Length: 85
Image (cartoon, rainbow, N blue to C red; front, side, top):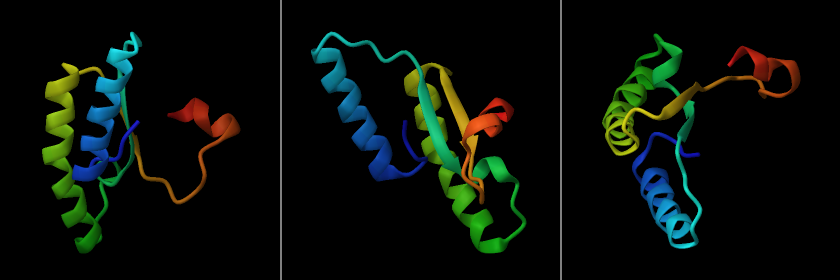
C-alpha cells in the first residue's frame, strides 16, 4: 500500500525488501488516494495528478503491472462502498 509520491514509494520499496528477508512475498501493490484516477479539472489538483504519473510508471515497472489504483475520494470508503472499487 502506497501513495503515488516519492517518499511513500521509497518507503514501500524498503518495506517490500524487509518482507522478502522475512520470507513474506508481496505479489501486488495498492496505490491509494490517487488524484490521477479522479480526472479532476481543478488546475492545482490536475498538476498534482500529472506529477503522480512518474511514480505510477515506476510502480508499474517494479510490480510488472501487478498493482491496483484507488482514486482519491472525498468520502471514506468502507462497508458496501468497498464493493464499488
